[in-house]
Image 1 (cartoon, rainbow, N blue to C red):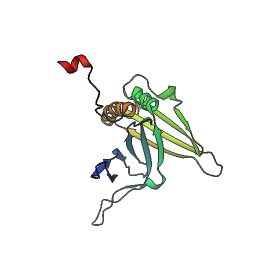
Image 2: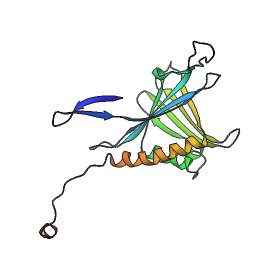
Image 3: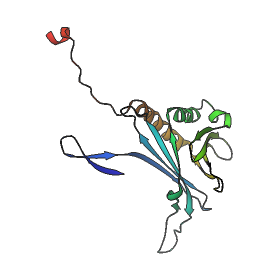
Image 4: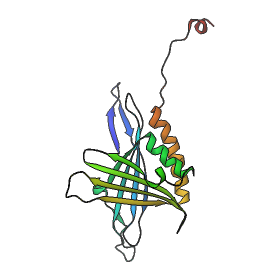
Length: 190
């Protein structure tokens, strides 16, 4: 998402939201896509990674002249705000320090609208990889639980590990800026 803003000098300035997506479609229509969006810390606001999970809505058809690709239901995506602690616990699983987040219990996020459970674990059978599952239960009765599951290959997990390790820096400290400081008198005389 690119937006144009004006800087202090009145010149147009582009702002970019750092985003990464993985799409895992399958022939059964039960696949999932995930988008990660980095929000660096700034001023007095802590940084985070916003994660969006969309279930596969169509299988697509690659045969014939009117081929179509699988589609994902982004309008009903599950959105989760991952803070420093959440990302750190995910990195523990990716780095092999533990097999699952909180011994399989996962992380719980509560808001006025819903309770969300985030479960992540290392898989060995039937294939090697990492499973990330999101379960959202609305507080108001009448609405059903929504869920999404995406399985990362070992290669994807390696890339995500490296990306999240770097993201933690920006979540904690924001974008680096040079802050001019007065030199001590001893250094200024030299």
